[in-house]
Length: 291
Image (tube, rainbow, N blue to C red):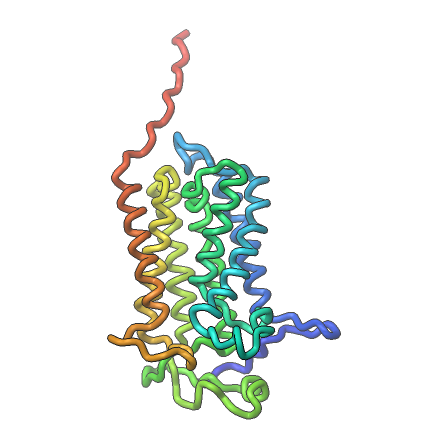
């Protein structure tokens, strides 16, 4: 299969270029914000507990989380995947529109934002994390679709029937007549990630919030997200091509695997602690006297 003739730029408005990559972030943030507001307003999901934030506080939280995603994601990419940028071309650190974002760095940024917002508003950080966790797969889905459109983060060489040659005229033009992925078919690993990290993980978390009532178990949804994402990422790292500048790690490990392992362990501990505790008892309702 040939990679479609996607152009990473949707349209040009004078010197301003509107890119699919930026639009993916906007879509994920806006939809995630509205979904978080809907969770807060659905009091049935919280049982005896109360939502950790008001809808107005959620509106404010969006800015904190957005900054955490962008700053953490970019700095994480530089520190985890391409430290040479720091001394060879530090200006590249600011060019987030060209790609080069790390999920794990973004996660650290979001955790920092949640902790800061919780401290400023006297909210329990884990409860706030439980509100944010079901929202994250939306952003992951759109982000991976944007990776696919950009023709980046492709998979390893494969002979499966749906293997894709990640080269089109736009990619060739952007790289001086060259296709960085070569002409061999590769796994469209960006689409695998969009399905597993985005759609499947969202469905699992939706089941936990609306069927299992885990919003009433502090730390359960945060732990479930950490474990679920880590498992998806570790599995998919086996078909995802490591970045060209990365060294060869022993035992076939990748940076994504190594960063996801402690994340999974922390999530497992949070999940274990949350499930050990019984659900908070529903407040008793007074019965009306018989007429």
